[in-house]
Length: 241
Image 1 (cartoon, rainbow, N blue to C red):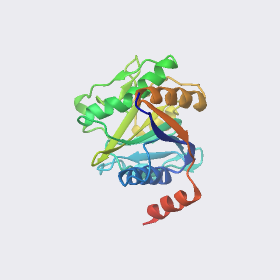
Image 2 (cartoon, rainbow, N blue to C red):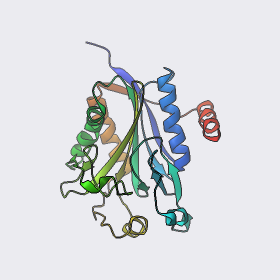
Image 3 (tube, helix red, strand yellow):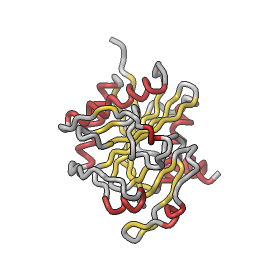
């Protein structure tokens, strides 16, 4: 029997969007250089933020002055593609790995499998979305669901994922909408409806189920390893440059 790969699991991190994106980019770089194993991590955005896709140039001017509960919403650019995502009441996952065969959508499907399996174990059935024609013109990532996104049985988009590749190395991260604030969502994206599904499971329960599923889907074991002081130094230095 072949020995299972060991992935790094970074414990839940709450930080600003700028820092979270710097961590994901750093992990991708380190894995590309062979200095880090494949990594799985979960994180939340504090303060809440709107993340823009790497190539997204157009967005409403008003987004620069939005506040929620007295805090200014950050506007952050992701290293990955796609459109704007509101990060409030959500949980983000990131997978950094290599050696996945196939085209982009096949890699998406391979990575998304752990999300489908993990949520199924929590009693939630997810399926792939299909993009409507409005996709290109919609600045809101959750406004339409593409074949790379996961939707609830009522058709509402639940997990939006985005990906970037560097050679054979993939960074894929995505937002799971758990307890979004409908009023803030409307403020950001206008009159578009927001599914009123609220997931009241604890982040701990969700992450535990997803890690179990990831072990199965990627045929690996995990080693829990927080970022060290040295690593934090590298990440924050890279962010400043």
